[in-house]
Image (cartoon, rainbow, N blue to C red; front, side, top):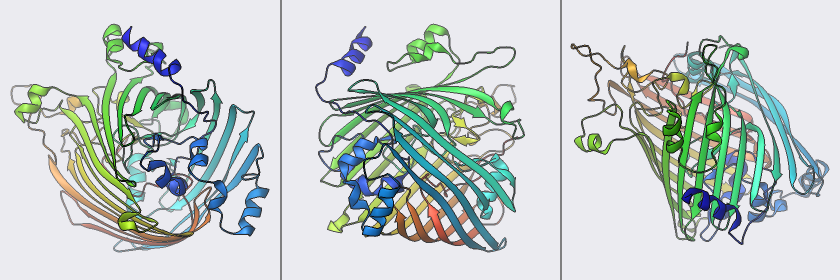
Length: 532
């Protein structure tokens, strides 16, 4: 009764709300012109819930301020994006070449083409569609990843081989403002919960998926119900009809407790669609729109994978945000206090700071972040219910048993964008048995002791053996189209992997050409497992 009353209060009891027909692309680069204004002190925007509503972006910044030349304004008006037309569109292009140095040196390239379109079907209904296909000869470390996981990072199943990978992605949604405070969206795409470069709750690292999203925005509260269907691609040899289906049901409650403090709760369930012997499908019990699934789980005797997270974000000054996430898969305080490395103490932590106009320098943006993910986090005894989709984790790309430090610096000067990004990761590795590194292995793969029982303790960060990965990229780009974040861009990537065994792996990669950031790119990757 208390939870029902709370939901009714959220839906009906406030006096402030705003329609939010339509959603912007899920891309930090497309969001870049608006990000500082959305994050500023006093803003009531829920910046940890992405993608953003297009109304939030229009409110944050006048659209014509993005286009500095009269010629480009005319072209943009012709495409229907600035003149109030109900139908809008634009191209998506990638055309870049590069060279990788080192023992596996050679030419690399990326070509891609597509388009996006957006239409208002009335004052409360919006339709969006975008599609893009690519052909790549990948840098060696990404090529190795594609061979191990069968997918390109966040961009679809990897068809072909090292000389040329073909892959594609498409997104679509129908967005309806059902009420002054409520938006219902059905479609295919990605979502992100969190203020960080990474998210320990739900990130956009994996491929797009079908979903139904209900967003309620009232007063200082935003509440999201997200239901999605995902795939386990193992054993299917690329045959989409043989991919194993699984479902997720997630809640995210964000509360702007004051002008400077945001508190949030995340909750998620993953369950298998079953098989021919037990065809389960979508479990209607998880349509429960109210927070805290555990009572539902206990009522139905559920073996499903449940996760719970908490976030606290604090604004300091006008342009600085300190953020944090704490994610629980399983937790027993008595075992945590013993510090004995119990395998089922599955937790993840994130701390970070995101600052704009640093030292008073207009256009200077800095980020620092630390992520800590214990062994066996995001795994499950039934690996069809692990926290992954299309061969990639739904949260951090390195899965579990990892520590990572991130430092980013960006400088904007008109249409020029200069960026320097670096990360250092310390990752554990498995032996013939599981030490909690591979989220696609069941917990039962732990070592067996001489008495025949499974080893339950002494699972430490970095065990069984630790590898270290340093990844850095420096880039400079001139923005052609801010709507799709299309740039003429040059970038240099340096990567140094010190594996647990064998010699170091060093990558030098230089690329130049057209780069479209309409979809978030995910170059910081490592092979953590091989899918069969």
